[in-house]
Length: 123
Image 1 (spheres, rainbow, N blue to C red):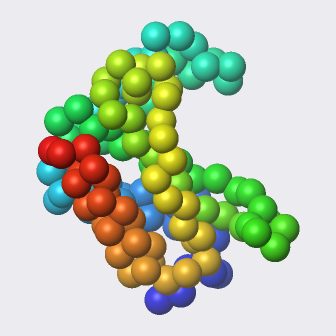
Image 2 (cartoon, rainbow, N blue to C red):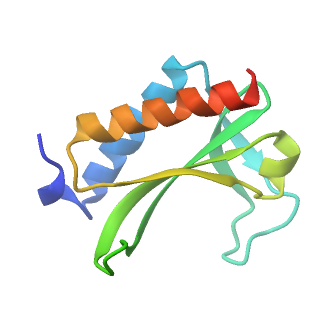
């Protein structure tokens, strides 16, 4: 199933978010709420992240240009090495995958990225 026709659909974004959350839970992560030590400029004081030991994982959906300057929708996975870093919203980029590829590819690439992040953090 190609996701290209669904990009920008809130239902599709929620579907991907749910699949990613399931994948993270299957990899040993637990959903948690991270309360920031300060309020972000947009007024946000907390966010949902996924935690495995000290490693915190944040999933974000965004729209930005690709290398060719074409506006695309993406899913971004980022990491914080500790709760303190997560509370300071100090996440390090993991990978960014376009949402116009098929769902299986999105999940496979994110799964590979998460496995590598777990190895790097020695969980």
